[in-house]
Image (cartoon, rainbow, N blue to C red; front, side, top):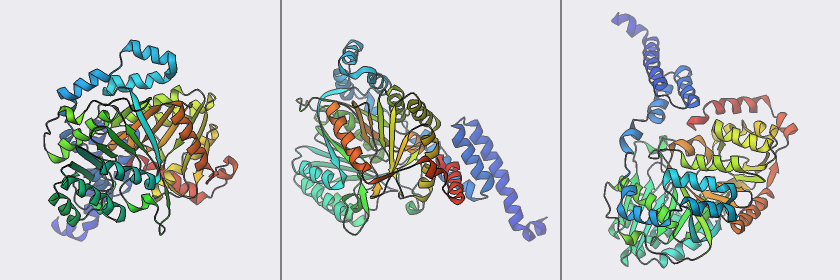
Length: 484
């Protein structure tokens, strides 16, 4: 028997692989996960011997989620509860706002308020920041003027040219007595030990989010912190798509990178602050004493109502997906979506197609090339579906479009970190600002229309004529869409 195994080692390993794969497939089925995801993993186990097991080991297991993300202490803190209770809107006030200006958008407000205790907050200022150049110009000014603390949380934090400028700005304030805390995603970031040591020596507290082995080989590991936020003094907050990396500020030697961020000022920043503190307690393994200075009283600095939606493995529900889903289903006139990755789940795809067929004017802007071969072809596999339902699709040709925004009916705008894909909706930590204001929506609509000047609109007859090889790539990539 031993001699047979030695002479047939590859065949023996294949048998062992499929014995383990069958047991793993049975375990996946018993977990009662999304059927599409279940089929994708089982398909990987069947058609990719050995590799399929590795894919499931690194991407598919949820034991880390069950073990690591049972951490709700921040939301149960008395200080957090106090400001939530103060800002939360009762049913009577919501009914009045529904009549005054919200219309059926009040359903989104109720959804997030009931599920996540995130109120619609009035009296805010909203500044739309186009590309990294505008974002960092405003951010550096706010860092310079910080009076108490600076909280930083980024998916990608590189110590390249813009990253080094950012680090120096933080170090300067830390040395002047400002409390600076930095949380960066370990997999996506490229920050040297030298830079980390320099920040720590200046008094900056800095921790990586979920370190893993071989980060360069595991860039799509599950449960990454995809948020890009900064909170200054609990009064100013930044949310959007712009990471700390040179390509986001469009240096001359790289391709054009189109993105959108927003600077928020007002009481809505308290919602962003609570999510930062929740993640900070996790990555630092500290229990920060949460006092009122993290949630200060803020005089009204504008008139714009804003609500924050955040989701991740620690969420009871996919809050961002549900908010967008509700917005799409409630749309009456038009929807404009910009996203770098359009790999929707069945719910979102059905919502968009049915909204279009009932007369809502829908336009979606995606990159022509993108920064991921697999994501590009997975995205392209949905285009014919959209076109046949009457949805207009634009390919952005000037460079990479990385903005994650939506405008609905000239009243609701969303700016955040969440892509229109399964990974953002179900796996990674994301955060999105929902802005209920006609002026902001008009500005966002103008930005969308300006971006279409650098696009080619996809024509359905021309799209149907694409090559067989392209269709094969699309179909194959779509099979793995839940894993991308």
